[in-house]
Length: 165
Image (cartoon, rainbow, N blue to C red; front, top):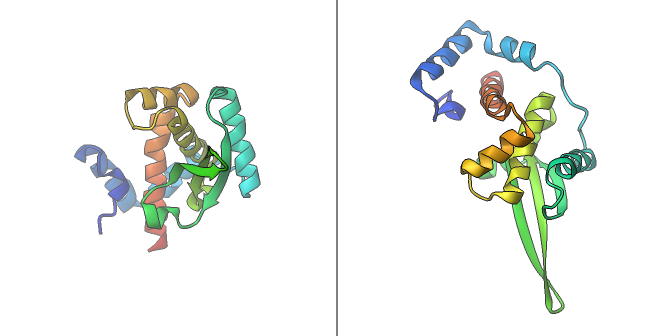
């Protein structure tokens, strides 16, 4: 199995530097030094409030959220760290849509910046469905360090996988 599966799309030179950090046993220490602060968002209701506050600040005119929760099955089943879904239901003669955001439980114990990054990513999907230029512009509007946080979150996931072995 590829130990750098989360970094598959990155240049070989960068992957080599990460492999070197892993071999030296310094990846975890580097991440802990840079992102030592954890968050207090532990329950689904706290997560809903956290996501809603970000949505109210940056995406006031977007559709309302019906549900936000941590999902323990997410990473294994869907090979994703967060999902956004739109669920449509028929109520009488009307069609009612509800939006859901699910965040992988690995982010319950992750540093606060990584939770913010994945929440920003999923909130951006409320406006932009595809991962295109407009999507990433919205992500960087909400979180200016989005790209660095996404890369470092991939390093964090790589480290977590190494520790589990």
